[in-house]
Length: 222
Image (cartoon, rainbow, N blue to C red; front, top):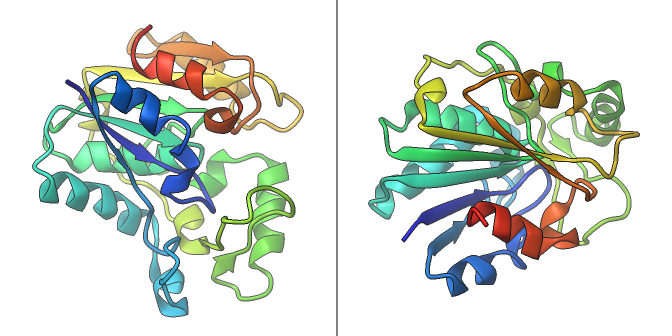
């Protein structure tokens, strides 16, 4: 049995994986879908204002601690690629597999901001204009989305090298939104790296909703 810990991207909560969770559970695996600090319905303005990338990595680590999880498969979508990288680097060997689902794969000293493209930097800058600390979600999309802590986009990641020693590291490139994706160069880099396995899915960025069966099959190694 595998223990999957699913971490949603910006503006989203555990509900982002609602179509994938039952498929993994039906296959006999334990599944934990998280909602990060600042994205929970009862989080106040101070919580949103102070949450950063370290906060979100700690969310994952505390969840591993509370549930006594070892040999975890961490799955991070989009922004959460930053989160699972930071968490895996600090997890003391408790992570056996990383799946960056159309997600950032940072190097030491990078941030979401430095890794994103101009399109998404403009989205975040516009979204943060009202408060200076909370980035409202882009127009359209799921109404359950919540404002995202700006500091988590700006904080640089610090990696010791333990992240690169996770035994199995995978990147999923969603090819159905090539006009806006920030991940095309990343796909090329990781494809040339023997430490990474690269998968392609012909979906838009929100693969968990567009093609949950394909995402589940990939996670199950089918």
